[in-house]
Image (cartoon, rainbow over all chains, first blue to last red; front, side, top):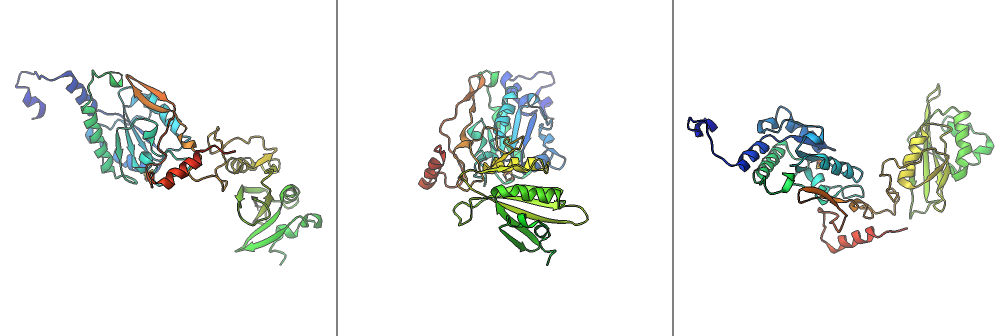
Length: 163
Length: 203
Ligand code: SF4
């Protein structure tokens, strides 16, 4: 069964520090929800029982950015909200990743108006985009898997993310 | 029918003369008058006729239309006593000096309506104690519901520092030349021209 069968009865497992740290990080992401519009409803559905993001290790939803490492931007971001979002992003401890969920967060969606940010990636880093208006919970789960791939490829000695 | 325009009919003749016209559409009454006259009319409605509830204050921009003045400031009044009714007073206001006297001393709810109307149309309500920005950011330079304000703004939505990873920290970069729209027709010459025109500072 699983990991134990690889240990050959001796209780030892050889791996690299990089692999074990990334394995830990990617299977215990703590999301910070930043829901500002209708996409947040689908995000809440993803967090709750029916779709249950906790099956993939990301159920510890933190409403304080200082305890989270995955920011989920779900919804329209207007020019009054963008400085708030940037501040929240900067308050998150390293290492951190960002999902831009839905058409509005990724490119402004249909709201090409004077108040709407046309994609949060113009003003802060984004790792994974989720298309859709709104994306289905399955899409957000898929984005989580993509984030897990991104996390798995990090090098902890790269100097990036303050590590 | 005297009941049809009750608010209008009960005015003393000197105030009746200030009313420019009266219309009735689907049971909704609308009176109109010119700018400084609204004050004496509203005082009468408040104190003599018992309109104790100012539902809303808003405005309409008739830019390019053949109207008396550019702006119409709309007061929606309602009374909640034994005689219940509601009507609108439309006040014509010129664009050269878009200033009106506030009615905060008559109805406290005018604070919010006047503040929002100021935020969106730039109309100044003299006497309102709190005429700050309401919906737009405090340093927003324009009045977005004016008809000559472009839908995509004049570049305000690009004026943010950018948070970027630099080595092991996040730094803020000053805004440079970002695309304004990833969606519809961003690369068409017409759109680029529109954006350039909109982003020029205007008085
Ligand atoms: S992408 Fe669609 S569902 Fe999501 S916030 Fe925008 S309008 Fe709402």
